[in-house]
Structures are given as C-alpha cells and as structure tokens.
Image (cartoon, rainbow, N blue to C red):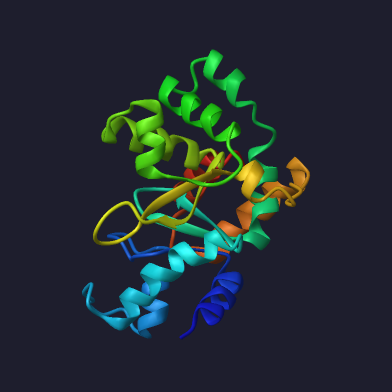
Length: 213
C-alpha cells in the first residue's frame, strides 16, 4: 500500500482512526495497511508506513487530523470537511471564550496561530505560550474537537519521531466552503451511520451532537 492508495481508501470511507483502539467501531488505517485486524508492533512495515502517512496527508491538505470523537486520533478526508464544518456551523472563537465555552490556554493558542503564516511545531508553540504539556495538550484537543485546529505534519524537535505541527483549519483549508447547516446535518448523520455501521443509535446521536449535527 502506498500513500496515494491510503488517501484513496480514506476518501472512500471518509474518516478513520490511525490505530484501532478498544471499541474498534471506525475504519482503521493500520488495519487497512496490514490487510488484517491482527496484532502489530512499532517495527512492522505497515505501522511505520501509517505513522508517516498520518502526518503526510494532513501536511498536504488532503485530510484533517486530530482528536474528534473519543480518545483516538482520527483523519477526515478533505472531501468531507464541507459536511463537518457545515454541521458545526459558524464558530466565533473569541465569543466562545467570553461565554466560558473555551479555556484561556485554548484561546491563546488560537490567537498565536492567527498571527503566524505557517504551521508551528508543538515545542515552539508551547514555549511561545509558556504552557505545561498537560495544559497544552488538553487545549489542543478542545480546539481539534471544535474543528478549529488541525495537525498538519511534523517538525523535528529532537531524536525519535517528529513532533506534531499545528495550524488553524481556516488557514490550512482556506479553500473549503462549508455546506449549509441543514443539508450538512443530514449528510453528517448519514456519514456516521455509513462509516460506523456497528455503532448504536445512542452512540450515533452522541457523536452527532458533539459535531454540532
């Protein structure tokens, strides 16, 4: 499997987790690359390929990446973003912060990224804002779940795997036009049922509410 084939698969399913997780309700990039649902290790070729592609596809603007539903990192193909952004509806980050719906660290990350022209690596962003790792990570997760923030590749910050780079969705996917809210809500519900056919109605309703549908 190549990165292009992985993108074609992601486009066909719409959204997927990188790793399987416990519930295993979503399509999984690793399982698709392995060709089976068996065990894996960090030394497997499929694992190492997926670990590269999960960064490469967002960096190229072919997918949104981050925490969206649950604890697993997900990728959403760019073709589905009009549905997700339309179902969420217009979102004013500063207004949400003033109303108590967003933390101060999260709004500071948003403001910082508004003032730069390129994606920023995790260590650089943390240092610029003086945030501890737990506070920073929670703020990023909150912004990701609102589809305000996306992971978009990696930067080298030391030995080992590269660290996440971050950008605002409105900048990284500037060409995306959201669907109207009504059609997007219907499309979102249909998408969730199609992508996660084993999910219960309770789970589907919870996910739909979380995404604004």
